[in-house]
Image 1 (cartoon, rainbow, N blue to C red):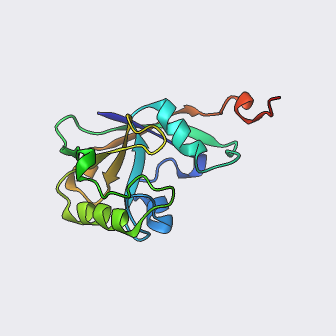
Image 2: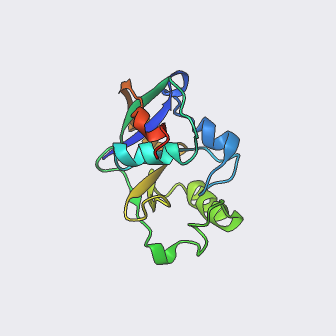
Image 3: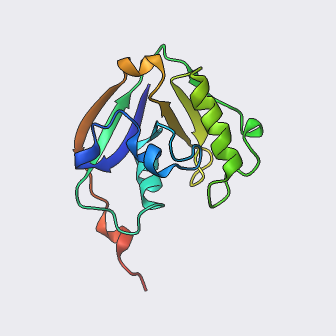
Length: 153
């Protein structure tokens, strides 16, 4: 399975989930090591934009290849904490994601995007034994179309 990620050039090889460890996120609190990825390049772009008013100039597109036989949890929306889509991450959703991560039952978990709920983001558990078979490939430099940032009348 292929997932996608945008990252600054110096950090593209990070296989340790350093960003999530330092800052936490919607699904995990700070101190939890996961890699966040998206199911498509377009969703990776939207997810980046929702967190950055002006993206840096050194972004790169990263393909993340998970083994086809790797376990991927796909919880139903009804099984997620009720406040999973709140604008700010909730402690309950973070605790739910941390329990999943600590359980190491799957290499990845497909969760709905808040930006486009019909699409899926992936939490990749860097502590799972299957991480050794995950491949990260720097595909190219990535720049957003400048029209996304221009004022329209």
